Image 1: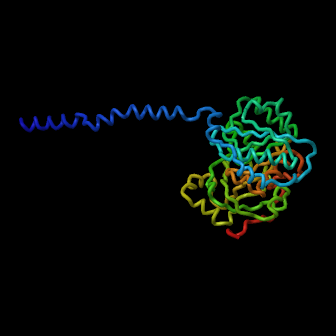
Image 2 (image 1 turned 90 degrees about the horizontal axis):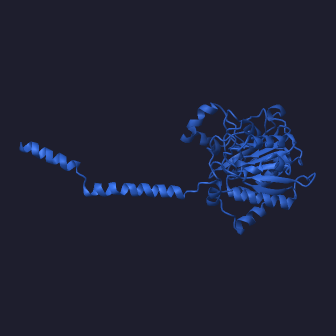
Image 3 (image 1 turned 135 degrees about the vertical axis):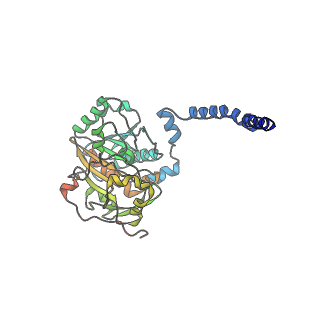
Length: 344
């Protein structure tokens, strides 16, 4: 009987809350309330998110961008040109957007190639407003979801009128519910195994192409984040004229594919040599498209060769710089210009 009482006493003691347990239980609602309060403080609207994430450039940053600008346009504009720079994000917000916007504004003004207007308002993508412009530039936009079929039609009609689109970096991370829009850009984001902190080798697939003039016929090294594209939506060499791609002859580039973070992609791309395009141009619905994946980092917009490459691509999209857009598969592949050995 004494043993039974002892067991019951011990069991009861174990079931009774200790002072420590009681205090911990008491803190749970407080912690939950704190988490909920913190969540409420997080930016919710696009305007709030943009204000929290995007900071204006200081004078030193602006000066570095201006130093990278070419003195004049590659081609004389056929008429006064206006571009609409769209920079809204539905997904990740790149902090380099202000640098890109500043570069584009200063670039157009200094070279006389175009006048830039800037918007993050979907409602500006309408037929009447777009008639004022010669090109739309998507600067690091992500996960764009156009609000109406009318906006989609307005962009297609814009292209059918013989106008142009240029895309910078995350412009390749959009239109997941609009197949034609994805086709227009040429590819859709499928991860970036080549991260923004790495210095990567790039080859010129078409060294003598006018839109590669900025690189003087030589491959190069550059620090930036580089995308790969969904195989099912990438338009490929049958529709795109590839200008620049990762230089897969360099170990610094290929060893990334041996990393564990690349394992999930191997089935998608299969065995054998990989080609990872970075810049291209194409004709689309009667208009012109230029896209470059450069531009994740702020300092990309301080590199004279990259800025000139972007200017030339924009002037092609505007219709002022004549450029061969015959797809690579039909035009044939010239001898590529590979990057030098690292450090040279």
